[in-house]
Length: 487
Picture (tube, rainbow, N blue to C red):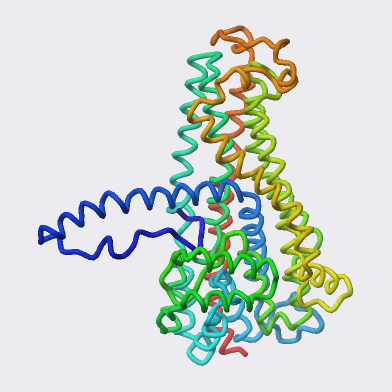
């Protein structure tokens, strides 16, 4: 999957240490074939459910990174730029530009709680003294991230095709509630597709191997106890807790490379951290241009709301209008999931805003950072986060299993919630093709068409956005040669 991750559940190496030419080795091979498969299935299934549970933070952080990438590549003007400000007589130096371009393609690599700092090592290798090699390295790091169409666009087109097929099936069988519910389930899980579209549209590669190859240094082995010690060196208390959990899990890192990528829900904060450690960030005119302000945060929050809530709203529309019309088991599941994602997005926004003000000298910036570092701040966050996680996990896992197994077809789910406390007054419909079903098909079709159009638009915007950023990045990299000669 294109959605980045740090940890993975892998089969033990011993399962693949045998010689098939020998009888004993052949038996071990059969055993490995039977054991390794279920491990990978469990790993993939758990990761898919994690993505669905954490859709809001995944999308929000990805959009933060995309906005920062756009602002960086859009403001790397050369020294003769007519738009420079009064306190910007010569613009950014070549070294500053190289640092910022490195942030774009490598800002998703972890710099806290790790033995080696990728930003420092890349900064020592990518320099203006050997500009031709630097240009090649930056282009290679960009090309390591596959194009949007190859990794995300084609699978999404297949997903859209399944929607179209289901809608056509509804046209041919008017009033088929089972097909309508299958459509609603697919639209609900469209949230994962939106996460894939956001992550696939970013420029920083999920695989850190190219950055390690540029530096020319091998992987450093880190023991279990070292991971615990390194976890305590992280700055934010929430990051320390996360790192400790990762160490205690003893799961393998996804990539056996020198560097480690951050989780998708932390990519925005990671890129902002890389920015704060560049020389260009010390120039207040540049910081004012790149830093996300109030309008920028509102835009990112609103976009995150849309990418999460619109699929939920369309799925809820279908379930609510499917007899029995009203709020019942399926529609209530989707509603609770949407509410939990709203809390997730708000908490993610608060976390990113606090992180962006980490080094500010203002009274407000210091207060937010200090509050986050206290146990009171952690307790306040947990009070909101834990119920949201429980709700999102239950609705995702239990809701999916109940839909697959058929538990939603019981009598309790055949009535609306207003009759749950007095079921004796409720009427359970047993007919499968009623006038009410046929009347509701109008809503099902409209919701399905809206989902297809919306997903197609998001896919196109994702492709266009990545194409725009890639071309702008390549242009800025190619300009380095002439800038070195000028400056």
